[in-house]
Length: 232
Image (cartoon, rainbow, N blue to C red; front, side, top):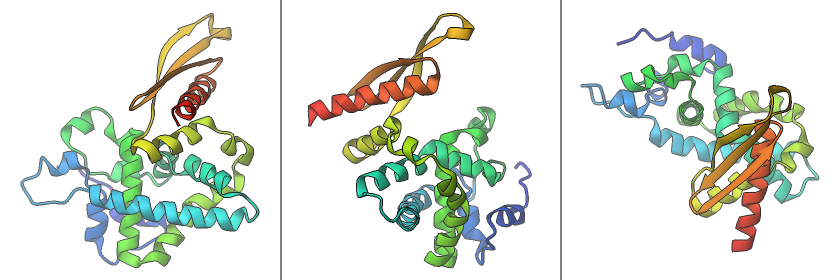
């Protein structure tokens, strides 16, 4: 069994001290690790489910308090830009959460500690662990410490007009999945390169182009939103 950093280090990064460390241990156990152990352990998937709900509620509350005049649709788009895999993984990295995860050999060998999907899921499990251990006020405080600095400094106009966030919101509402993006081509010299990106989810598949991967992803997302609108 590998040596893990002290959970006290994680508690310090979170600014939260667990009364029941077993709940924290559960939040750190990925299914790949549990499947390889002779002991009867629980993976963190049920905590992910609960953490997703708690996180969505608290982020919604924070946004309503911070943007008191904003319409529901815009609040939803901003929340989607915050509660997504990439953003949650970024917050997890600030806590150095990856170094504390219990992963199976396969995930260890494929750099699982730095995968956005694993980090985002683990952060949701961590939110649920705080909620289970200390109640709603403790979870509210933890999430606020993680996200209020982001909310205060975010580019609101970009978040509202972010096609990727709007697409994710629509896809999750309709199909309960997350759209995936992949680069399907590049052309031109390094100083003037054009990227081609494909986004797909369920029956939706669209391609976009741009002078950066980010621009190409936004273009693909806008086209996918157009397809969804025509299907409505």
